[in-house]
Length: 444
Image (cartoon, rainbow, N blue to C red; front, top):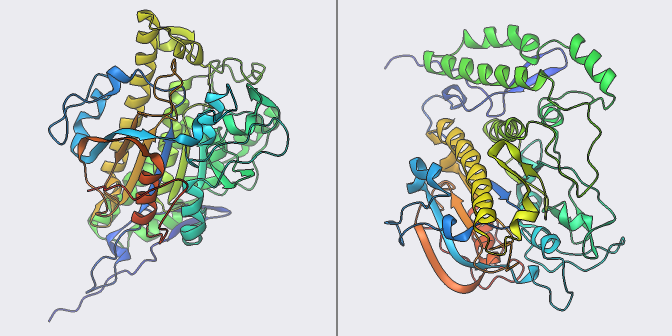
């Protein structure tokens, strides 16, 4: 029998140099000789889209696995067999229940909690614990970050943003406790620094510029460690490490470039946030999210494409009106076309993110196969402000817990909490209920 020698790397191995470190992706060398690869961990990602959708263009054509993507989801066709689009989900907690206007604040506050936000502009905010934070509390100790909260817009934690509702509801979907939102990070550079161990994120712009001029690349600092490691790896692992480090290098270079409009005075809450290059920042956020999952920095992520009631302008799409203003379309065809264009753009970027996961190896499968990714909105039609018939899709297999089912028609008023309960259980949590759930949805 030939003598077998194998480099046995720890699953959470790092390349180190000075104060910098870079986590490695999964390598064959992390599997001890003569053993089977361990099952990859499961990941859960929740993406919130504000202001509802143009539902007619969102819906797939046909039912079940034979369905085809509609105009909004055309970019998802290459991964269509790995997706399920649900129809019939509702979040009762987003409805008024006697509290009057404020649907946009409630749509965000209830999106991952499925609870009814207390109508207040003071400190007595109260909604519920969000599904991502339930998972993080159960499983988060296994990673550097129990959860990661990202967003494309900042926003105040206090004050009133929507018809008497606190800005905390509009600006957060993750809630660690009923009265404690988890603040999201919306600066890609800050996310990069957090993931890769920068000791401090400088806020002063002049100091930031001086720091960037002094800083060496993270990869320059770990280059010697990388070369030493690669000499011990097989050809396949060497290629994986080279490709991974190149992707980090490319992302780092893009983050070092000044963003257009960065010297402009920040917009006040409620104003347009379109001064910077939004498509580039959105792509950066998705790249960072994928890197965080690939390096097992975290297994639970929430991502807000916009705050509840976001009025961002999408001029780069030829849609100059604010998103929230357009959502009150009154069935005007031009406004509906604008909403559909924004929806299509968001789904295209989301499709790119899913493609990144599908291209990343995770043990003996790809990263999408070990993930459950939910994309949805807390409103159906933004003009009606309805909290039923919500646009929701699920991507990925979660290590066999789910499979693509095409277009699934559920009973009307099926609680969104039923989907979240199924995700909780697929992630290995033993919960038998969540919020107003009645039973776990079938994901296969």
